[in-house]
Length: 377
Image 1 (spheres, one colour):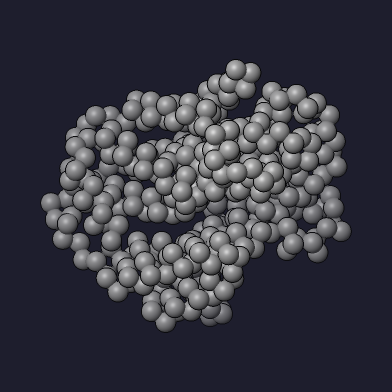
Image 2 (spheres, rainbow, N blue to C red; image 1 turned 45 degrees about the vertical axis):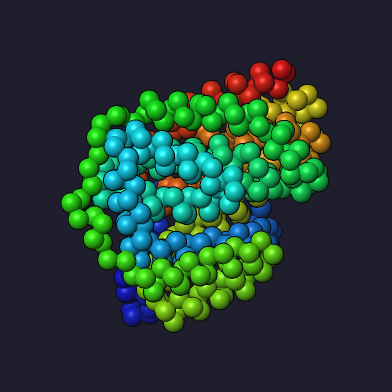
């Protein structure tokens, strides 16, 4: 963190770094343009932000940062290194665990758990983390597609149509099965079978047990309260506890990520609400399943897959096809899924913002084609 000029107060490093964050600058430029086109909507901007989501992200950032600072992830990473002989095996374990975890606790929670663990593990093993985190982003997009609670677009569609949990899983299972095979094959070929070796004393890393137990004790209650729509109270409790126990955790989380998410909500909802966008979508003939599927996947590249699901639901009642399209649409460009942004921000490497597309765009094309033909099967 740094001191603000003039002695006004403390500025987190992540906020200061936004001046060099090209994605943030692009979002800010888009906001200025949209504001110029419709200045009357400026007072409505706060209502466009999904504040419960922002509060949930803030709480998760605090809890996972505490676990990371405690040193526990370094210890777990060292344990895993001792039991995986090659980089390929390490990648397979991390990617598959991430995918399965995202089915059960949502894609963002899976990333908040797995990416810090991966970074600690890679530091201990002296191996690059960029590609691993990129594949974990692919993994949560695959795994979270299966269940109604895996990601926000599935949760919206599940609640909108009121189908049973099992029926929803059954509807998505063929697509997810194919994408899972693709993910496993891609992971196998993307990582070498070279041996890995951790630091000689990786297991001797000191763990701050007090900080770890505080974070662990708060984790489940926070998620339960958030699920019961008491997110603001849950965040207030977590915030106050860390203010007493370890206030440095509050300053050190990625506040810049939260600013970017606020801008994304405003920009994407302004864009989705443009009359030209509605008129364009309405003229696509979405009563035909394959057109609906294609529109869901492609529109996700522009407005992200959660707004795309909401938009598609205005024109069709075919939840299965919408779900297929917007979940496939999570791949491709970084904006396709908010999970991509979370993974890259947690990684903190600028080159990854370009490198992710080397894997995600081909995955979109392959999964898109397979899904297109499976719809007619």
